[in-house]
Length: 136
Image (cartoon, rainbow, N blue to C red; front, side):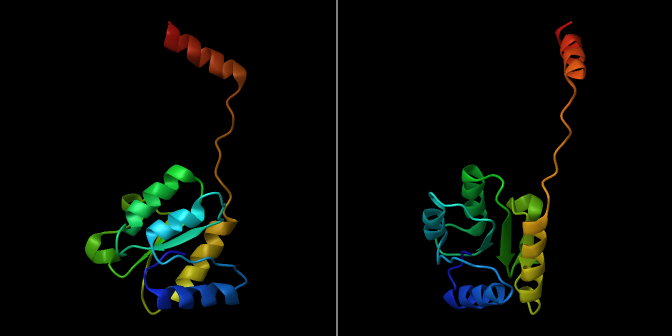
């Protein structure tokens, strides 16, 4: 979890710990990237507004390093800024509000249990036919 608000990090870490999750924290995007070097994380939670690099830039850098890692963006400015999954690159965008803790736990569980969707592998004969059409 990455957030420049240490109190928020501690609170979220405790909520996730009560649900049986282990959390590692960083107080800046830059420190979060250092933590990510050489390590694998099952999921990353980041704040949007931080000093230095913001959450969207942090997500973009993480996507380059580990495209499949689920990412959650937290912000108190979702509606005014029009933040959503498409505009941020996050798998989920959650509002910092009264029910943030329950939303966070529910979203973490959903993202950690989802199965990647994979298209079935095309049959070799179909691939040859498509290639023949494209060549001729």
